[in-house]
Amino acid sequence: MDKERYILAQRKIDAWCLMLEARYQAHGRMWYQNAHTFAKELAKMYDISLEKVCGIIAVLSPQNRWGTNKRDAEAMCKAYAAKIDLKRIVVATYPQQKAKAIAILNDAADYDDIADMVAGPRGLKTRAFFDNIHRPNTSQAVTIDRWMLRGFGLGQFVIYPALYRFVEKALQDKARTLGYRPHELQAAMWVCIQETANRENWDDSRPTYKADELPF
Image 1: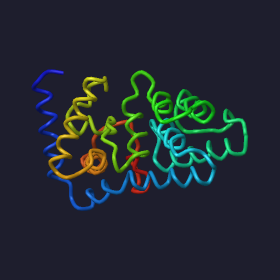
Image 2 (image 1 turned 90 degrees about the horizontal axis):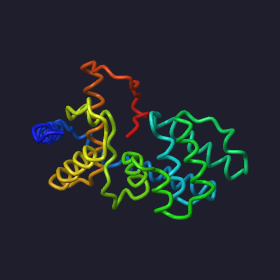
Image 3 (image 1 turned 180 degrees about the vertical axis):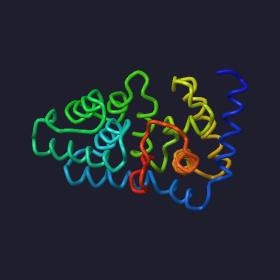
């Protein structure tokens, strides 16, 4: 990444912020709070720690609609509580992500242990998603996916750690100036980017989401 592209990304973030209507702002303020409430409900229902439930939701999220993500997370928790073989549960994401969910349920001990299982060596986005759901009132992490990068004019780049950290910091700094938590600004901006992409017919492999299936 050269300096000019870093500056371009910062300007794109500023431009998207100008487009955040009240409905986007309201969505951003509540999305992770609602996800946290859902996780707490699963934790109580199936007598599993909140940390584990948030980890399971996070690892089952890649390339998965939010409605399906919730369904799969509950299916794994329900099977675990009933002592059913977790390998029999069908989920919509990658096999390695399912294996992580099983490892979290069977082997994780605490927050740091789960965070390491969630992320692996490069899973910055998944780890951020875990932290955002687990600690919506204090988390400073930012969940950055392909839609975010495309909206910032960076869609052609692999999400390598240096780029991820740059975009994360840019969003954290902007959120501070606007009075948001970083993940609240991300959630608001994600919907704005997605709706704009749909309206302007951006070409991408991701599906079009219904309002109740937004992934962030």
